[in-house]
Image (cartoon, rainbow, N blue to C red; front, side):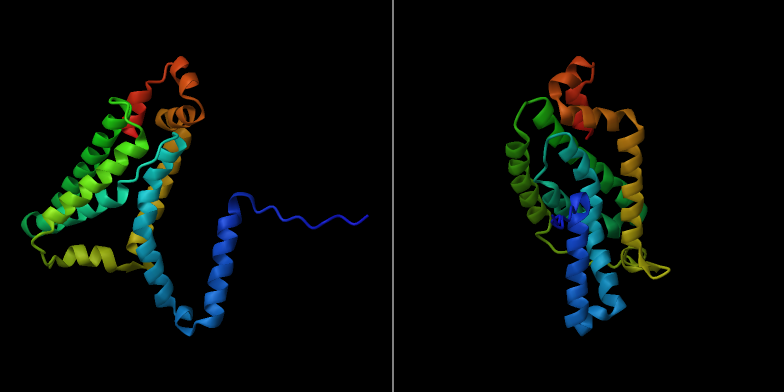
Length: 209
């Protein structure tokens, strides 16, 4: 009796689907065969990938954050205001702090006020988006050459934002696998009750995430 052919894609199924999709585009679209097209795709996808590193921790812990895109929009609008006045590095540091404050506020709503993550982050999604529109009421033209160079330059043909995404991915992997925060994240995602009995501070861990 012949055995039926079984293909188990497992966790790599989405990767195989992406490769097949790329091959189809390469075969039927001459523009897609240009290396610059891939460089543009990789650069633009890198910003989503960087956000995805943090979102990985959120999802593993059993929650979700719908406000991430609005947070990015708000931080980007504030950055355009800071760059002409403060330069690249002070502005970037302040924007990272702003992002941490926004994330902490979401964590407090979920961990301390016990509001479900879906409701809390959905509400903050609209709140952060409104703030972004208020900040962006007067458009600012960013003329900082260093900032433009960092966001559009290449290293050995690889877009710099993609390199930053890889670094963030490596750091996230190390934190998840080698640190107490990573172990606590996994424990909370498996069972809140078991994590509590094990002595893990669930609210503190959720806020950190």
